[in-house]
Length: 105
Image 1: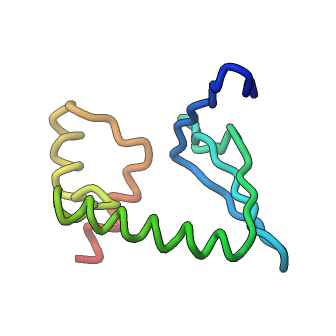
Image 2 (image 1 turned 180 degrees about the vertical axis):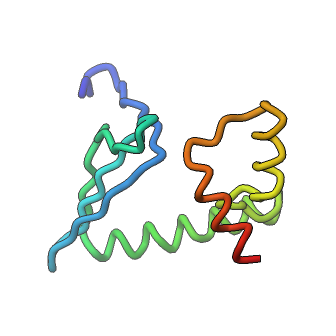
């Protein structure tokens, strides 16, 4: 990392793996590729007291975001996804996920 020019790397992540010990929390952040495999981009290591504070601040920030923009949905609507796929507008990698979700309703 080049700290002389105050340049800090910017990392986009859509995947994280967590490892811990009695002393600290180690978070491996990165991206999942098209095959669903995690590719590390950086490791973030913090003490447990810092991790707890980080969690509280992150929870508060997510709450503020959801008040402004509405609840963050973690899963797509399976019926709409299936309709879009059948119309050729999207390609779903694993259609079984959608089929299982629809059956549970």
